[in-house]
Length: 81
Image (cartoon, rainbow, N blue to C red):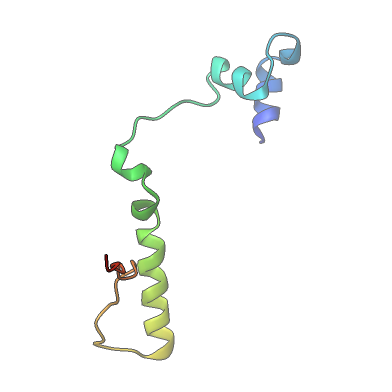
């Protein structure tokens, strides 16, 4: 069931009361905010699992064993002043 369908089931005339579907869903309790660790909001942390799975799949596909993992961050170039 979509968000719109859930809201319309609880309050069929929601558009006359709320400016947006999101506001109606929030007030009706269909969607709720969750408290999370601030570190989980960083893209590097959120995508770490995806990157490690991709590395594992690559190694499995190409039968790579024992090679050291490369850093996901490129080396920083220094400027001569």
